[in-house]
Image (cartoon, rainbow, N blue to C red; front, side, top):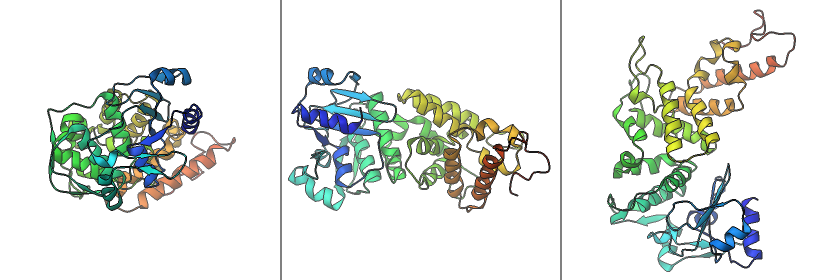
Length: 360
C-alpha cells in the first residue's frame, strides 16, 4: 500500500488525515524530491490504525503513535497537535488540496523564510532548525544554543532527521549548524572527527576532510539517499587511516566502508540501504583509475547496478576539489565502452588485446 492509498483509506474511514510538520511544509513549498518520509495527523487511535494496517509498528519517537516502514518510505502517525515548539512546524495541510492550517505567528515566518531564534532550544528543535535551513533555505535571525540536558533523540528520530537532512537541497547548511552548535560531536562523532584532519592544499584546496565533505555535498544532481549518504561518509575513514607505501590515507576507503556500515546500523537504517552505501564508500576511488584498469579485474564492480551511483559519488568528490570534469568524463566513457563490449560474445573478459576498450 503506497502513501496515497494510506491517506485515502484514512479519509474513507472519516479519520480526517492531515499532513503535518515537514510533510506539510514540503507540500507548501512544493518540495517533491523526497519520497522517504510522511507525517500524518489523524483522529484514528492506535486500535483503529492496527485494524486498518497489518504492518503497523510502534517506534520510539516523540509524539509518534505508530508507523509503517517500507524499504523506500516511512509513514508516521501522530495524534498530537503540537509537534514542535517552533511555530513553523505546527502547520498542517489537507493532503487532497492546497489548504493549509497554521498559527498567525507562523504565517509571516513561513512566507519570508526567516526564523527568529533566541536563547536555548531543545536538541530536537536544533535538529529541526538545521533541516529547515537545508530543506527550504530558511535564514536565521538571532543567536541560539542547544540545551544539552534536553531529551536526546532516539535512534528512530536520528534516522528520520538525518534522512530529511540528506535529501534536502542544501544539506551542508544544516550540517554546518550542527557542527557550530556542538551537536555534531554529541550525536554523530563519526562525522565530527573529520574536522580534525587537514588535507594537502595541492589536492584539496577546500580545506579539511570535513570541509571537503561539505563542499562535495553541493554537487549531487539528485538527492538520492544512497548517494548523499555515501558522499557524506566517503572519507570517514581518513581520521583512522595511517600513512603507508607513500600514501597518507592508506586503505581509507576500506576503513570508511566499515565506519559507514556501523554508523548506519547504529541509526537503524535498512540493511539494503546500509550495504548500498557501504559499497559506494568502499569503491569511491575506483572510477578515477577505471580508464587504466583491465575490465576483468573490476568486473564485479562494473556489473553492479550501483555503478551509475558510484560515478555520481565520484563526480561529487572530484568537483569539490575544483579540478574540473575531465577525469569524470573519461571514467564515464570507459564505463560506456565496457557496457558496449560486454555484450559481444566473441570477446573474452578483457575484450582481446587488439580491442581498445578504455579511452586515454
